[in-house]
Image (cartoon, rainbow, N blue to C red):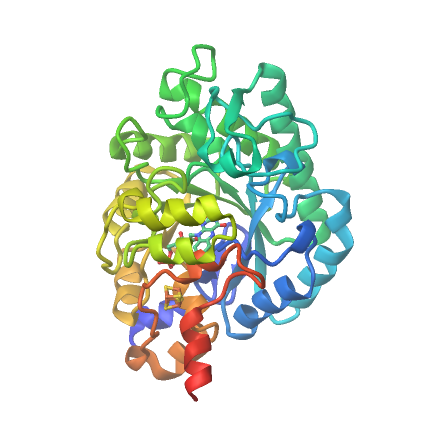
Length: 406
Ligand SMILES: Cc1cc2nc3c(=O)[nH]c(=O)nc-3n(C[C@H](O)[C@H](O)[C@H](O)COP(=O)(O)O)c2cc1C
Ligand code: SF4
């Protein structure tokens, strides 16, 4: 095995936590928590990555608050998940893998029918919420300072609970157009108070959330942050400002930064590259208006980005060169052994992998045996992205077709 692959597949420390290798299953919201309850489907999904050898798996979108859910089928970190999630974590960890939870809040980007505290979703600034059109919530309101304080308290409470029930690490979502990213981005944050305007002000809430989680989990517990390298939309977070976001998070005591890009709200294909999700989205919609919207407007809604390996490498390297203490986690099209070697050669500490692990949950095991001959088989068709809300949740339709042929 080459020295670089050897490095990727050898134990490494994330902060104070040792992982058995440097491969982390990326958060890919599973769509496997019917009525918000974590059960067997979610468990089985993650067990396959743990059995397949990943150093750590990440449970996607653990919202800090019931109203922080993009839809009402997502789970939130309330007392009701303590037992089922705690049992699940214990089993997953018995494989030797570590388990992280992605801590998130949707802000105004919501189609949650079952809002509890709020009448309408809230973000930094009152604006149209296109995602809420089909559930009768087409507007969002601006958060008051009281709302902001409340949101911070939910990060603290979620942090306490996630550590108590057995998560090994927490990944705070600062990107992709969700709650904290809405504050960071000048496109969605038009506030004129101390939470808007300069980058320092726009970072105030995200840094308060980080501080709250740190206070909850203590200094020895790894906190990762998933951030955007750019919103890739006019008026959004620019590449240069994103580097300063990284510097703020580094100074705020984040242990590791995961450098993604694009947003689910404005430019989702920037995050993925490869085939457009327009057709798959049209097929998977049950609401006839949304179906028609994706069918006829889909090709215009999603920008085209041909797939290439390591599409966020340059941005990740800029962050690596800017931060003083944080470790780096590469994400975005690291699907070949050659790419894995390149990331290791750049001194980037860990790699998060999404689609290639959905395609082959035994990626790590297989790659360790086959080494440079390992071929993953993900075609970057992005059909899995459109399975998020279909019954049964996320899967690779290509695998099912292959099983049917066999
Ligand atoms: C089905 C699916 C669901 C996803 N859900 C999330 C999510 O909940 N949170 C998140 O930060 N990223 C999410 N992503 C993005 C991935 O974490 C990752 O950033 C992206 O897939 C690029 O990495 P890859 O090339 O290894 O797939 C999702 C990706 C897929 C394919
Ligand atoms: S559906 Fe399968 S082949 Fe297509 S991008 Fe997802 S994992 Fe890869």
